[in-house]
Image (cartoon, rainbow, N blue to C red; front, side, top):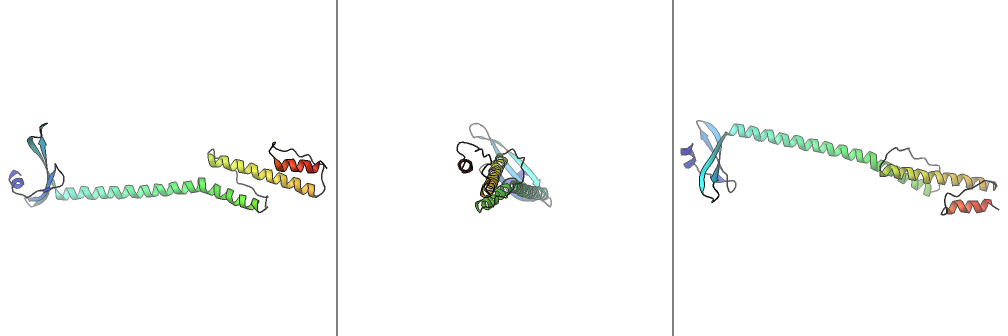
Amino acid sequence: YQHILTNTPMSNESDSTISTDIEVEGIERAIFTVPLTDQNEDSIGTIVVGLDKADLNAIQQKSELTVITIVVVLILATSLLVYWMSSVIVRPLAQMREIARKIARGDTNQELPSTDNRDEIGTLARAFQAVVKYFQEMTQVATRTAAGDLGQEITPRSDQDALGHAFQHMSAY
């Protein structure tokens, strides 16, 4: 190989590695050379590696197939993650939004699907269920009051329960 290397023009791929393609005994080869230096950057030798181009091409094709496979797997995993996030996060929020819109239009006959999630979405859903239940109870109080039932016992849920206090004062007359 020494004769071939000294008589073959080489191309620089980087500062320290030189490669070239040559044909030896009818076999196309890729030759890589890396100079060895000591601490003073003085040359102490060269490492020469020769590979059959067919083997090198097979390695390259296998590497490309591996990269393509990894990309496809990552795309599928991302798609599954997006689907999961949609079902766990977006869908319950969309249901709560729709129920809030119906309540805002006066339709208090709403029911949220139960949730056992222990995350923030589950906590929000349970709090929203309590709001819906409160509106339903106050709707029943208003319906009975409108029918003339002023003797019902109404207990506000807190000192800030303006609606509960208003109905309590109304039924006191």
